[in-house]
Image (cartoon, one colour):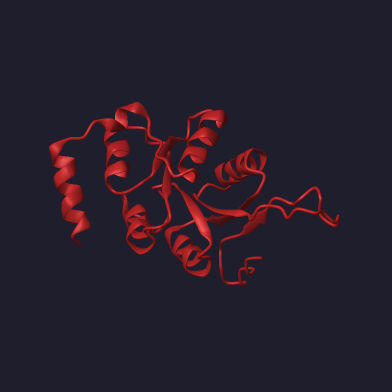
Length: 178
């Protein structure tokens, strides 16, 4: 079990409870996947966590409502297997949270979940190392499919993300050198 957060931390853990709790079984349940939902809107976080609980039976979730709490959650929970990240959170500027996670935790894939569906934003998220991009307007089934693709080691972007401008590529190369 992951340690509980202290009083000063502003992220919360939730875990799907096993319907078989308390019963003896010959086989052990598979280990839990730990996913971090980082979004500053409590209602959206709650809806996304509900989707994760419904679609991913063995899922433990952590929540972060700002860039600083995202950093704390990543530092204190090395078992995190996927970050679902809103770009526009308190303490973040542009792609700073994505760049931080990719730079400090390159083994942890990040799926950007954003209300900004502009092709340039999607392309930049891809260039800056996101494993996926999900528009907040996407249907629950599409969100779940994209998350599963990334958990399986793949990438998931809307078709328009395949385009890449030379200016975006040069900027990504410069930022990667920082």
